[in-house]
Image (cartoon, rainbow, N blue to C red; front, top):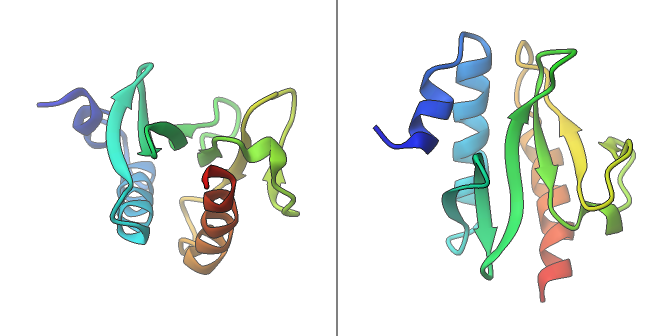
Length: 114
């Protein structure tokens, strides 16, 4: 089994289902997104650069989408914290995936790669 698949499949529910759904939502958004295991992270590459990656917050145990170049984005639900490159969109694994919100953020982020 590939490392990227292990990342998703070895998680407990409801985190596992949430991450798998996020993987599908992001992958289906644009045909040029390439999934890759990079720096021990499940990344989505766009134009040979890290576009975003998925991870789990240590404190809340909520999955999040880390948006590469996110520091340049302004969206009320993106969290910067002490990061200098990415911003995070936290996802509650016990609620429906906010697909429209994710697509809005992804669309805005894609403009930073042109």
